Amino acid sequence: MSEKTTTARRKQHLAQVRSKQTRQRRLRVIALATVALAVLLGALFTVWRGTSTPTDGTPAAGGGVRGSGEYPYQVGRPGIGQAAPAFALPATTGKKVSLADYRGKNVLLYFQEGLMCEPCWDQIGDLEKNVSAVKAAGIDQIVSITVDPIDLITRKMHDEGYTTTVLSDPDLSATKAYDANAYGMMGDSKPGHSFILVGPDGKIRWRADYGGEPKYTMFLPTSQILADMKKDTTAK
Image 1: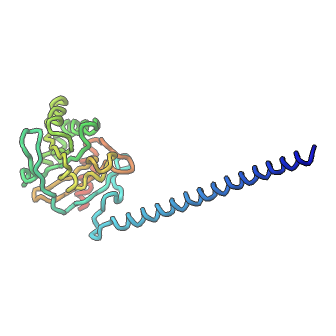
Image 2: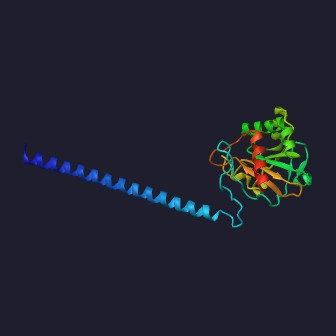
Image 3: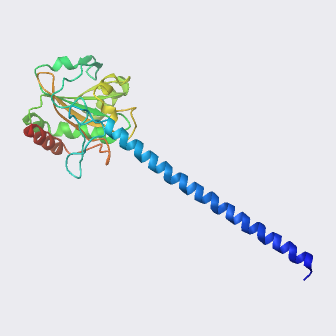
């Protein structure tokens, strides 16, 4: 083998070694950057969780999970004992319905994702099938709130044969007032799956936000809703 050929092969080998070393250095830099980013995100999340906890002891959105393992829920704000925000929205009754219309009664507000969430409508059906148990639990009226146009909601209710009053909240004014859009799979553009019991005095007696992490529940048996409500209100 000539000296010229040997020299060329040595240069080729050296180039390969240097290329490999360069790739390894790049991989190490990427790995270190990934670890640093993960640490930073973890720290930011910890700070966010700390600053999102109210000083009055009321659980914030994304707070502690309650309920059974199968149907966990959170308790957002406004919470138990706080005044329920007023609203007046178009209803499937053909008129506007306001919270003030139910003064002196126990009204269960059911915030839900709307037309594209079939389990949400199954929830209304299950509540209607168990109306006797609902009444026995002291609930005088159920009112559902979602963000779809009232004409489409009315058609859906007619097609399903349901009679529950459903309200249209297209600008999320009521939904945001109750922070009900903090619990669901659609980000903050729609309510999740929240139940809020407003008492005769206009104050919140019970609240359960089932639509959030970790399971994003969009349907649960009425018996479970009533059991959770009884447990929490009795504890108070």
